[in-house]
Image (cartoon, rainbow over all chains, first blue to last red; front, side, top):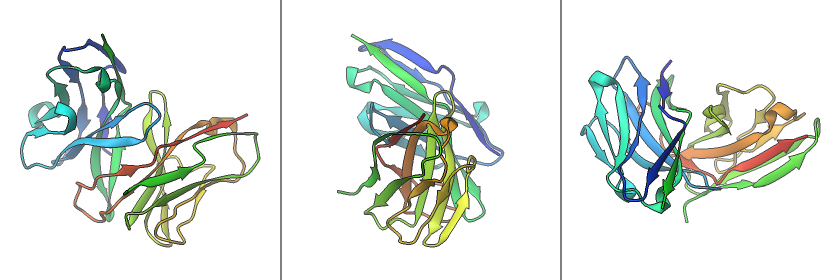
Length: 115
Length: 116
């Protein structure tokens, strides 16, 4: 079964600084990868997804992620953090099980933005 | 507005008192699923449904039941809740079925359950 690890359960950055959230996956076949964001008291929403079309994927709110097969990584970045980026971020991988896609989530990384 | 609606959003109950968390989606999605979110563990799948009358266990189904009598509704039932079921629960739906791998989940806002 596939798995997802996220290095750092909590990350703090200053407003305007680079955001880097790490994600590594285990997969023996080309994966489909996702980043979801959870704002306080809300459900998860999709930030971006990788489906093998391009290794650099752009998402909403200025976020992007780069798929690196050799490193089995899918790290999320944003050049300049904004206060509104404070949230929980989940990396996820899609695994085909029988006839549907099972999504496996990482443990999450809580991002704090310091003014 | 396309959305997944869960109720109640917050609930405190006592051990053994049956409860139901409702989930409804207005997007005509085939696939629906329940997750629980616990600190440090991310989201773990409880049950899922690929279509009406078709449900199956996820990774942590013990102590839960589901039903899918209509396409839009997928209630989660705790027949005899216990304290270890205290958690944040999410319902999600997706339009896709099959081997696309790229189906995006739409989540409800969550239901925070406390079992005393």
